[in-house]
Length: 334
View 1 (spheres, rainbow, N blue to C red):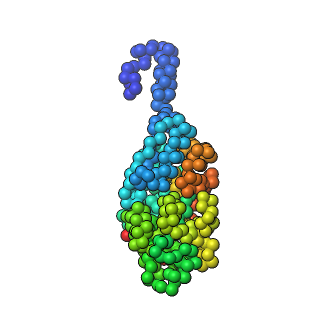
View 2: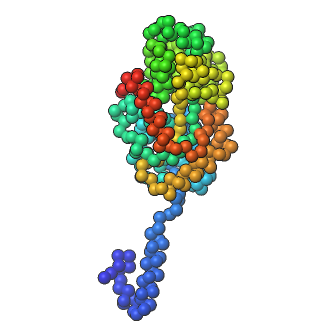
């Protein structure tokens, strides 16, 4: 019988015992050649599911730079925007599970989108969670024309005028929308939600006094807050952000004490990635999160770097349950 790799007879080419040794040597060499290259052996692509310039993009680029150093290969950032992050996330869910296509994603496209839109076909189970990168609170703000300067004034004014006021977010079913609905739910308030196509048009209307209230990601709202063009009423995590200790947490107000919601960023891969590849990426991620350069860049942008070795399956289950309660309260569905 002839070998597929060596289409000639060993008995003819190597008569006697040398034939056996020759065959073994050749087969051993073939076995070595068949071994896969150690991971990683080529550039890694990190998909960011938004256009360049936003908080998720910044997080992806800062992390990509450090991962490249830790893993010894180039890390390429690919911006795939659209559908509130769902298009980029779907691309990663469909990618080969070899560790060369990853997602730096936010809570919106990883956990929220599928709860509010029947057009989103992927699920959390379609991803391999590698680790949490950072978190960032959102912030409730008031326009200058509203006359509101504190969260207490906001609560009183809205409660006394049900249906008169509205708040804006960056779109239906986004984390900003859910944060606003959480405020309505816990405060027993009646306000109309105005969805915008992103943060920029929302900011324009707030600065132009065309809408009374809005919810920003902290990093997007800070320039307008610091310039005095909008008034910060409170951040959405249980405690004040270490980046903005001068801005109270909404939860400091008794009726809003249950508010604890933020934007988070995570490194994810397609489902069914090989365990050794996942382990190597987790190690590289944890090492990257401890570097001073990464921490400073993320903290300067308003984020808090996550603790190491977060139990991602438990974290994702807890966050999804939180979002589901808000979606059910507000009857959000696209």
